[in-house]
Image (tube, rainbow, N blue to C red; front, side, top):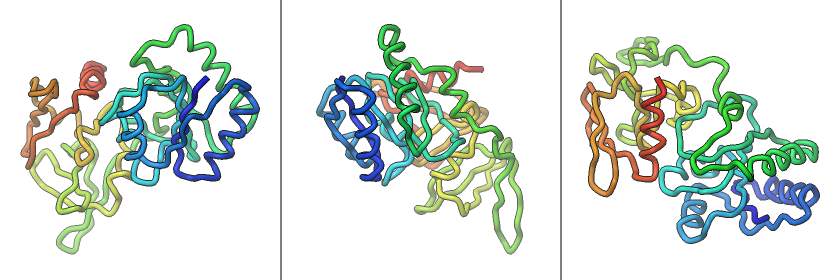
Length: 251
């Protein structure tokens, strides 16, 4: 069984590899990657292994960014140090979600699932119980902004999209107002409802209610039109079109 580990902490990656080799005697760790970019480069050049163990927070961003550039056609086990984490819609094959620090018992249960899913695994599928574990218990209701010496709470339902403006995170309302935020886009990303917001690009997190229409574009991409002003074209990468349309259809 060939395995790829994507983990930015070297000690954690080594500890995970050691436990994997104890639990699964025929396991072969063929690559250990530490960042989003290294993972993208690897999967552009190599075929998918039998299983990928993937940390959610990597040195240069969230693992979700990987799926915007490449398609990983094998089961994936997501790893994190946090008990709750919002999952945006993405084109992945998740079969389990495990918490750090890893234990032998955790890995034994994970490999039981791997063996179970190996005969039923289909490209693009994701275990519903994994999805539920990844969803936040409580969605954030509003974001606090500061402008003209005043603080104001902007309710989520009034926000059309979050984006990067002049290298700073900001939100844009349905009424056409833009406000800068203190949180990073990565942190904002983790607080939003995955049913309501979708990460169109690395710079844009879009509210479902802000989408006017979607049209086919060159190179099998999708062009998303919003009901409000947006400064640039919002294009869905061809590798993510299926996941995006499935997200649109989940209403």
